[in-house]
Image (spheres, rainbow, N blue to C red):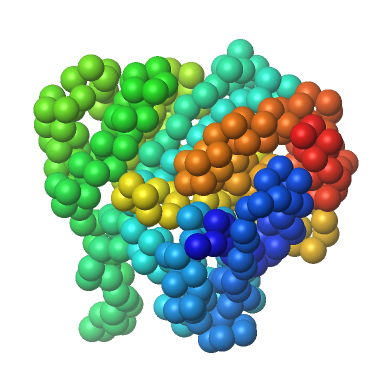
Length: 350
């Protein structure tokens, strides 16, 4: 069995994944690696954003680490052939329903945030986003012509009790190992799916997790509170759409999208999918200035959650922290280091 499947993808994806390869070679040379085309790169080669062979390789590995997908050159591709469709297909095939997105503030970067130091310094929260349901997967979805001109677009938000319970169970169990607080976010005031979400979370909490503090918060209020007082949060659990939005907001508060990793987990023992939360950044692709830390820290999460190498994960996290404390900065953090130079700074920290 392959330990880690790499899916570099598009844009800056291959650049940041290349730095992960170097770190893996030094930190754990016995780790077995495989690699497949993914996203627009795969579409150009095979006519599909992810091939059946790549999906089989992902399901047969212990963990999967991807770079990024997408770019303007594929905007004209059929919707089901676009790079993003390949990512949705991969998530569904792997059954990774719980997306863990940490937002933490490295002490030397407290001034890099657009928020004041006293608001952001010491931030350490994690968003658990439901990943394989909701409006991104709901049916029906279509665009139709209307009589007399104009069009109508429909996307459907759908959740079942089982889907809500399994992702919230991850959040509650995670909170038990942290500060023991879960904030559940939805729009129960205007959406039936949000009302069901709140009912299911409340019942699950009462039945299995009464020792964990639970609070409910409307998603729009949570968006405001993430800017006003983000350190009030420990674990946030929410649906696919709101999780997509809130996690990007939380990550930017820390200083840069180039800093933060994510993990997508499924059933116990199943391979996890790891990825930096930044996109393919076509505006800087090929320039060698992308921040590789989010990809490197995604590898750190893979070591911890799927590969059973927590000690190595601790060493890698400490190396990243050491590099930042030493002044290593890519342009997104106000510095001048290239992608390769930032990777070298982490290697030096090891």
